[in-house]
Image (tube, rainbow, N blue to C red):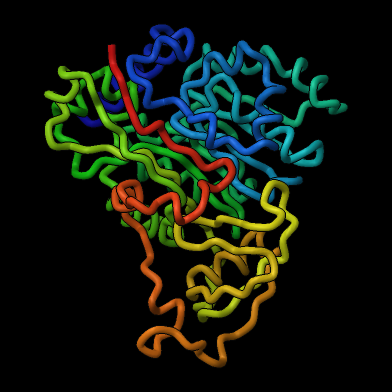
Length: 375
């Protein structure tokens, strides 16, 4: 019965994104729109190099461009018409590679159509992008090898798949040790009721299949990922009366998370780290997530979990690590880290009145725009 239901959802999604939607203007809501002020200059320049036919068929809920991408191998889940792939293609350079996979054949064909155009536009000798038609919960069947990618990104797509755990399991398999899943998606404030799940428009527009936000940590750690690291979050509001009635008390947030796959080693102790600076677009300051911002040359005390991520990922050479031998003065005699409030709930982050005081959103981290309007 479950398999039949999943198959029906796949067909509905393929139809919605392959036939119903012709351009982003056909969306019933504006949840899947990235605010222009979230896009940093170096990424904006890359976006301007992408063909208009590709960008016009973009339906993502954010902009997922993590830091330090040069020479990386990246997989884009649900690549659609290839917009993000072509942006990343420029940032990884000719020695890097980007693979895009999507279940909607029409979208993949659009992406492939402009391979030669972008190769010439970027000044590359050969394409560094590959597009595949396939399901994101069946990466092995699509021919993707284990431990072959440095980074996997996903832009408001995992919610469209019924079996989220299987998607994360497949991602874990194709990631190298030290790699990460960097993704924007929609999350619910509670377990999504069945009537919302069965609403085809709400599912197609990323609400019906939203995961209860607390379940992400449970699923991720069950598979082997480190605990999810919250990057950004924005409340989604609905002004359409019919949809409000169907949604009831269920609230939604768009959020960007980082999930790291680290080698099985002994626990790392808390330490002080100093950012060396120099990462493209983050030369003076690296906003790693909602809880940790690193300024060039400034020592920051981090917990063991964060230290392990920095030491065992592509960021290892961007930091100096020193043990915490003496506790620095802090209120009530506690260390700076012990008094720090770690934010894990995307709804709390999105609703913080001083959210902007935490600093600007990390470059390339976006979510759905804060307001959804339906016709």
